[in-house]
Image 1 (cartoon, one colour):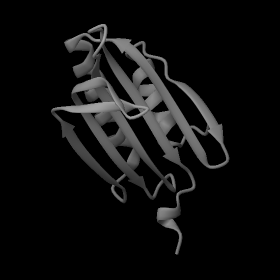
Image 2 (tube, one colour; image 1 turned 180 degrees about the vertical axis):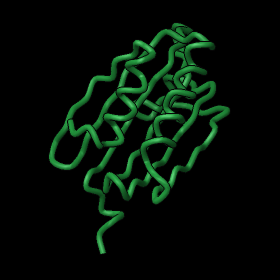
Image 3 (spheres, helix red, strand yellow; image 1 turned 30 degrees about the vertical axis):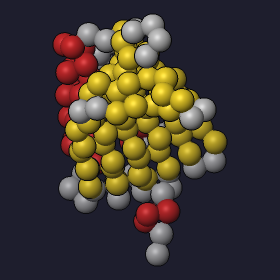
Image 4 (cartoon, helix red, strand yellow; image 1 turned 90 degrees about the horizontal axis):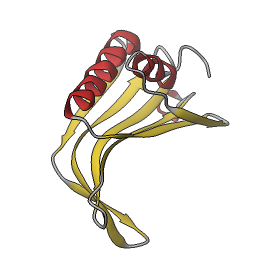
Amino acid sequence: MHHESITYQVKEALRKEEIELKSKKKGNLIISSTNLVYEKEKYEKIISAIKKALKSNVGPEGEIIELTLSTGEILDMGKPEFKILRGKVFEVYSFKHNSSAIIRITVETDLQSGKKWVSIDVDEQSPSLWFEE
């Protein structure tokens, strides 16, 4: 993975928090994810680390859209399986990296077992069609 990618910057920021994202790359697409046991303090550190990495690495020519989630649900095969309790979504456009990414950090609970966790997902396209004429 190229050290200039948005995904790489996020992975490095989370590595400092002792969180490892697993990644796959195919063509110009990179996906990365992990799930962690929910701890409020850890969740706040994850958000802070990602936000800091994005602001310092995307550059002044880029765009970062930050959305705050307060509730939601995940349907699996048309049925509600998980509830989203809170979260952040960052939509990132980096001219510097010629890439775009969606980064989701959600606190989820399993509707059957009641287990709670943090899900971190990064979907990046590099080079991105957003920067083609």
